[in-house]
Amino acid sequence: MSNLIVHGGTPLAGRIVPSANKNAVLPILCATLLTREPVRLHGVPDITDVKKILEVFRSLGSSVEMDAKTRVLDLHHRDTCFDAARDRLPEEMRSSIMLVPGLLARFCSARIEDDVTGCTLGVREIDPHVEVFQRFGASVERQPDGLVLAVPARLRANDHWTDYASVTTTENFVLCAALAQGRSTLMNAASEPHVQEFCAFLKMLGAQIEGLGTSRLTIHGVERLGGGEFTFAEDFHEIVTFLALGAITGGRVEVKNSTPEQFPLIDRTFAKFGVQIVHENGWSRAETQGPLKVKEPFTRNILQKVEAAPWPYLPVDLLPIFVALGIKAEGSVMFWNKIYDGAMGWTSELSKFGGHAFLSDPHRMVTFGGKPLHPAEVESPYIIRVAIALLMVAASISGKSVIRNATPIRRAHPQFVENICSLGARIEWVDGE
Ligand SMILES: CC(=O)N[C@H]1[C@@H](OP(=O)(O)OP(=O)(O)OC[C@H]2O[C@@H](n3ccc(=O)[nH]c3=O)[C@H](O)[C@@H]2O)O[C@H](CO)[C@@H](O)[C@@H]1O
Ligand SMILES: C=C(OP(=O)(O)O)C(=O)O
Image 1 (tube, rainbow, N blue to C red):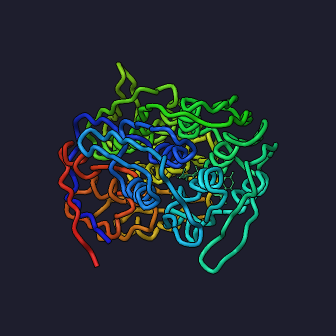
Image 2: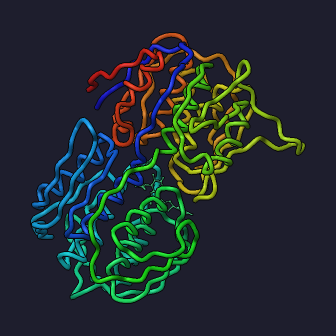
Image 3: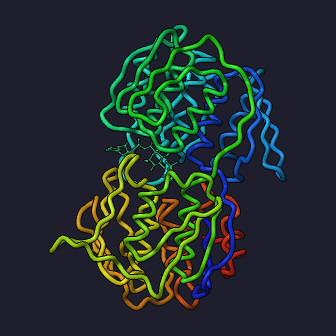
């Protein structure tokens, strides 16, 4: 477990080039298992989730060559072998479940380990995934340390309509359908930017996918996929995080952003806290005028609110970042997490800083911002963006704070502390017990 020591109170200023989006990189790494041809990936982030997947590839006999300096990764799954009785897949990360289709397609067997839940945000179902695998022809057997799946032959295409728009279930459906026999359709498909990026990668390998960015995907299964070269896009989570760090510290941070067309709702959400986002010449910056202040709604007797749900709503992983702004900005905001039932139980950590947040129910939290804040020692749950939100609050307060168990940040954000320090912050990692 690692802690972060934060000497806060410095307005952050400077420029950041964001890394790739973990939630695009991981399904794409899993997708490479579908092809026996070489694949070259540019801009692979140095994060722990990537390391875990690459370790598995190496242990299965794949060729994995990572240039640590240029972050170019060469993968070749030519001599790969898998034995469901012997081999184990990564745990404590959601993306592990997306190794299943490649294993089924290549070796007719696969595993789902006991802990593929990732961040502790509440229930993270595996049933929608199991249902997808079954629909493509897999049998599923529960064993003491996980589920073992098997298919008799090539996966068979099908039409499916999921209960809700799930990111990884959509990706698993597409992965299965890419090499299945026949045409598959998915209704209620997720359409997040990382889902679109993942589909674009598969198309580059030769998959036939229609409907990118919509809630209906049609996939014509092909006999085999080819190889190729792909460069990851910038991570919108990182862009928002660094813009918010600039805003909460009263500084001026600019972040490279090649896709401002994805940002209108994100920009409107910043504006609710008195932060104007300006996109210019491929860069985005956050502008503030004096202390942050919540924008009052015109409707009488309602609170300003921020609602997170599947895309094109505000992405749920960004919610904690805006909660941090809500603690700082004068006024009240209701945060509504329409996805997870256990992602908001960290209000007590905010109160250690003197912040005032009230948990209304498992899905809703109200912040009463603008209260005097003081440095504190707080504990992060195993949730990447909550560790970041606590760091944001600490960075905005003069004095020394400690964020205990901030390690989850390393799952998604490479050189995160180095990047913030390049903006003038004084933050360091220390080993904790
Ligand atoms: C590796 C990866 O890509 N992880 C992301 C992915 O996880 P993941 O794909 O696991 O998230 P899902 O979209 O499946 O949602 C997670 C859970 O939320 C509940 N649920 C979700 C949607 C809904 O409309 N109703 C509902 O009840 C379900 O219990 C589900 O199990 O998408 C999440 C939602 O954007 C993000 O937080 C995760 O960072
Ligand atoms: C919740 C996240 O990741 P995972 O689904 O891998 O836990 C996240 O990236 O914020």
